[in-house]
Structure formats: C-alpha cells, structure tokens
Length: 564
Ligand code: G6P
Ligand code: ZN
Image (cartoon, rainbow, N blue to C red; front, side, top):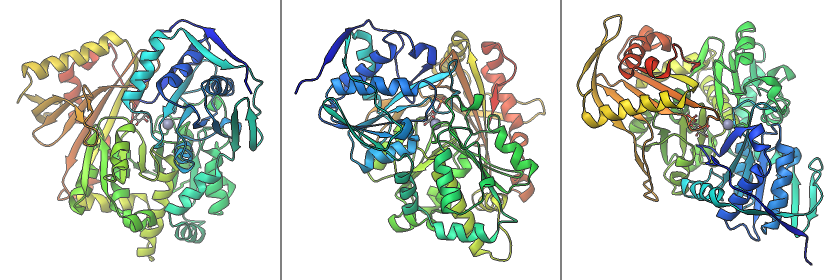
C-alpha cells in the first residue's frame, strides 16, 4: 500500500548547529516557517532510521505537542517503522534514555531545552540520542549541522494528528505509534538499583525528625517523583511540591541551583526540613539541599562513589571506574585513588561519559553543573541522585542507630577522610559575544606567549597565588581516539588551586561565560576550617581570578548573574 508523501521545498536557515545538548533556541525561532521541519529532516538525513524504532519524549514544554506531530510526519515519510512515545509526549531525559536501551530502539528525539525557561517567549529544544541511550556524539551532530546548511526540501506524510493522551498502539500510515506510560519503566529501573526497603524503613521510622521535600520545579519529574516518594516510599503529599509538569514551568526557571530553586530553599529553611532536593525541567539535573546543608555537585558525586557499596547495583556489579567533567572539582579523583579505581577527566557534556561506560570502564560520574549519574543509563539522572542520597543516609543511620545522621554529618565525615575541595562557579549570562571572545583570546594569547607563567598574584587581603600552569583543555577519547579541542582555559596555582574559564554551550542568546574556582584543603586542616562556607574559603582566589583575566573589563559587567 502506498501512502501520501509530500515533498516540500525549503531553504537553509543559519545557525542550526546543535550545542552541548541539541539545538536550543527561542520558541519563536522554532516557529518560523520550515525551521523545525528543516532540522528534523536534517536529523533523518544524517541517520539511517529506515525500518527502525525511534523513541520520542521530552519535558512537555510549550510547543512540544506541535513538534511531535511534525516528527511523526517527517519520520514516517523517511521510513521510521515504529515510534515509542511517552503519554502526552512526556518522558524525562533519563526515562527516555532507559526506554531507548530497554526496547533496543535505534535512537530517540527529545523535545527539551533542559533547565532553560519555557513558554511562548522562552526556549525550546530538539536533541537527538543514539542507540546506547546517550546524546549523539559530535560526529553525528556535525553531520546534522552540515545537512541543515544545504537542505532544499523535506518529506512529510500527509496524515492526521496522533492523539497522545491514550496509552496503546495505533497505526500511522506505514508506521506504528506506541504510546506508553511515561513513568513505570523508569520506576522499575530504580527498583533494580536501590535498596528501597532500607530507605522506606528509615524514613518511616523518622517521619517526625527526618521529613523530606522534593521540588519538581513544575518540570517533567513531578509524576516520577510522586511514584517514588509518595507511592513507593509511602511518604505524605507534603513531601513533594511543584510536581505537576507545566508547559511554561509556571513562569519559573527550572534549574536546580541555589539561585533558581528558591521555592525549595525557602520551604526547607522555613520548615527546618533536613533533606530537600530538586530536579530540572527535563529531569536530568539535581540539587541536594537540606536545612543549612548544601551539597555541591562535585562533592555529591564523590560521596556517592565513596558510599557505592551500600547501593545494591554497585555492590553487585562493582564499580568499574569514576569520572568527572574537567571543571568539576577533583574530589572524586581522591575517592578513585583511595579505592584504586581508574578515573577520567572529560570535557563538559554528558556525551563524553558514554563511550567509557559502553567500554565497561566507568560506573559513576558527575559534573559541577548539577549532573550526577551512572552507567544504568547514558544520561545524567536527577531522581537517581536523589534516591542515591536517601539510600546513603538510610545506610549511614543503620550503621549509627543511636544518632540521627544527616547531610552535614556525611559531608564532614567525607572531608575528614579526603580533605575538601571548595568549589564555586560564577556565571555571566547573555553577555555580548565580542567581549566573551576577547576574554578567551586574551587567555589563549597568554597560553601561547607564556606571559603569565610563574607570575604571582595577590588578593586584596594579601593572600598570594603563584600560577603554575596555564593551558587550553583538550581531550582524546581513549575508546574511539576522537579529539575535542578548546574545551576551556585552565589556570593552575602552586598551592593546587585551579581556575577555569569556559564559554557555555547551552545558551540560546549572546554568550555566557563561566568561571570555575577550586581550592583544596587537606584532611589535616582543622574541622572548623574544613566546614567553612565555600564563599569564605574561596574569596581571595576569586579576586585574583577576576583580576588576572580582566573579566570585568572584557564583559563590561560588575557581578555574575548566578553564583553556584
Ligand atoms: C548540559 C549537558 C551537561 C553539561 C551542561 C553544560 O546540561 O547535559 O552535560 O554539563 O549542559 O552546560 P554549559 O552551559 O556549561 O555548556
Ligand atoms: Zn536537564
């Protein structure tokens, strides 16, 4: 039987280059005539999806319902055999990664701009994932970009819209559409990983003195969090908030950090909640935050690695190796060294972990950008990290039944063993690209000329820092030998401190400059020193970094937009 396929002429649009995590632009950009269709056709021109199964999901943000129908039309016209779609087009990024792997799909298309705000005047995004469930590697995204530059037509199946609200199978021209429950496969997966009976026991017996709160920030994790926290762990409704996904995230910025997750921070502080957590729009990021207790993402992944043995998945399968992105603090390296594990430093972007996992050399990894995860899937996983922490806290309390062990006890014990890597990140969002490029060029010039080598810099309070190294980070993937250059300027200091400058790859407007600051204090330091607020521990290094990079001059701004 033949089906009506139409060929539509089009012209290329500039700038359809996928960033760190897919193509992200304002909704209005995607709404231009043929813009979305061009990009979707470019994906199909770059892969060979004929006769294959594709998973389609996303965070449910504004414009997703329209785009999913476009994907059906173009995908089917390009030969896709079967689409697996979350009900109402909802699949968190980690859930989609799991579905791709579990049902052995060829790949997946995720409609999300992650933690960027949504709604008609904000962001939309399209991201392609490959068969291992992870983000497409650069080879694939470069190919997609090349195709967008020369596209002259796209193909559509002339068919009516698919109703995404009903679970079940439908035929769609020559293809099939399976609409599945968005949550159940994911919850099943977490059950295979964590010790839920232990967590449940602990939380049930500490309902009064250890209440928890999860904030979905109106993003996609709401239904997943409800299934885990309320339905599985049997905790009260008051343990979750903002857990109904909204297309514009209720006007909020669904990014779990101290600035944007204020809805969580405020309630945790006001109600003295010892354990709080939040996830981002598409569910792959997380923040762990209890009353007066903040876990930096760099510490979080290191602590999960340190405690891996209490998590059944790792107890059974072992920990193969550890990894972090380059700007992430080196805390996890110390855990790897102590445990005698292999460890890796990769560029920013979760896709770099995938090859190592597929090769069986990596189990636990994380990024300073509130991403934590493991080889159970090929994306970072917000709720996985939250349940990992609950598992650790429950296990720690089992070990010490006479004293309630909380987040700060876990942190302080970790620092007393490994020392502490104070870490902070300053973001300068949506600054003019010229200034950002000039800042980077100045650092690159200093790298070439060696002009800053061994120079000594003093902060206003007199603390001195001597530069011991300056380089542009480059990574050679040990599995496929691909090389990624220009991944950020790194300045190292004689005392082991480190400052990194990097341009964000996820912004949708202008440029965003990130400055990462890390200072290490050995375990031999006093408990008071080790427990200091990060801002205090880092201030002099921050002063020096700002001065030697001339950041304020280049960017024409005085203060960062976000500090994490
Ligand atoms: C996304 C990726 C992360 C990455 C982050 C970096 O969230 O999934 O793996 O760390 O982007 O964002 P940036 O804006 O710093 O390029
Ligand atoms: Zn995300």
